Image 1 (cartoon, helix red, strand yellow):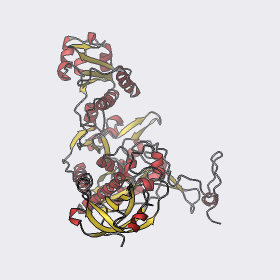
Image 2 (cartoon, helix red, strand yellow):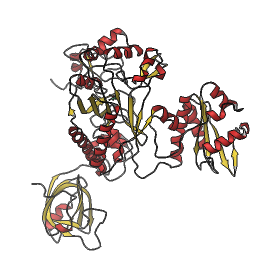
Image 3 (cartoon, rainbow, N blue to C red):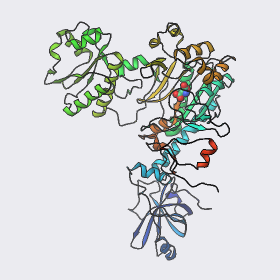
Length: 598
Ligand code: ASP
């Protein structure tokens, strides 16, 4: 037996006991011949003290110990010398006086100190097996485990069945780019790694499973960002004979169970709901952060006959005039004004009008164009006070809302309005548009995916081809301004699915070759069904208070999609390529890796 206790469990009540501990030498200090070691395992730290007068031989051996050596010690638990207790450490009242030391393994020179903040992420990723020893990351992995377990336990109690779906699946043109896997047995053909088990879970509904879930690996070949990885994990759910309310209830119950299990946090359910239209109109975002109260105010009715041409012109053209009041931000610096104006430009506005309220005066070149009644309307609608900064957008609804939404977030950041304490603001955003126009592809695309159901009251709009007006029975769940999941009711009637493919300009040929299995299944008694998928990595990131999903994944890729630890992606044995019937294009030659096998 290597140990009787972990390194976080000995207390005053254990004084006098004979114990064994095993772990890593966290730090070792030599105080005039007495060696102090903080012994670490995944649970915590315990001080081990080698005193030559107690056991000269063991103390001598302890002299050779270096950080991250792996040892086992057996000895007596003793009270620390009065005055040397460490109240910050759970085991801070005691120490272990060993009569036996076994060096289980030695550590070479360390890539970086384990208890320091390391900003070189590539270095951390190269030595990830070492990086993960750090208590914060070890804690994150455990929180992740508890989240996954609470998910399974909760959904099991609700009658959901976990079903695994294939990783080697089929490429279909929805959403992101696929990762492809060449088939050796069928040369020239490819599997695709699933971007999500969307079609499989719908097929499971046709199969009569009724309540499905899976903690599913998904793969998307996208450009990477702080919260994106080429492979990630979803909590994937689908059920038959349900309405959105049923999906909301099971998701809320599951999230409540997850927060309780992960961090003993009680979250408030049911969550508020906002339609997509309201969310955009009021917050300028389909994932509003409501932890600070600033909202977009509509001024259309007040400026409809204004003599200020910029506002009047936007309204005449069918657009909107909107504003936000950045309370107490009249002191905005020139640099900050430039920054927010740049945000406005990037998101499509021609410029950014603003008013500073200073010394009882409204300071802005545009104020002279406003009538008294327009000023009064601004005053009361935006509750303008001394020290405020009013920012305006006059444009198409989408542009004005997005611009002010982005500025709202940036100004809140600058003004430090986002509370430091933990607030868990959950929200459903419902009634997303079904379709969006892609100027690049010159066609309509599904906002969610091609299997999402239009709202029944909007079905006539589909026949009338009034695509921009059609709302979907689709929803997102948002936490503190981050989209943590999304889903929809699905199309279960083959005719409606055909109509949807038609709207998406999927040719009759492609419908058959790409989606024939689904269309066939819908014709064999498909029940009404719907579901949701939540991003497990992002959820765990928020629960752990981390800023990147990389810190809640054991072996993430870096921001260029590389695994620096195993050096993947990598060259392969040319014979492997030959077996697959694959030749690399010129300029993408193999580096001539030595064959693995003779
Ligand atoms: N499969 C969808 C996604 O990954 C989620 C869903 O509709 O359930 O976004």
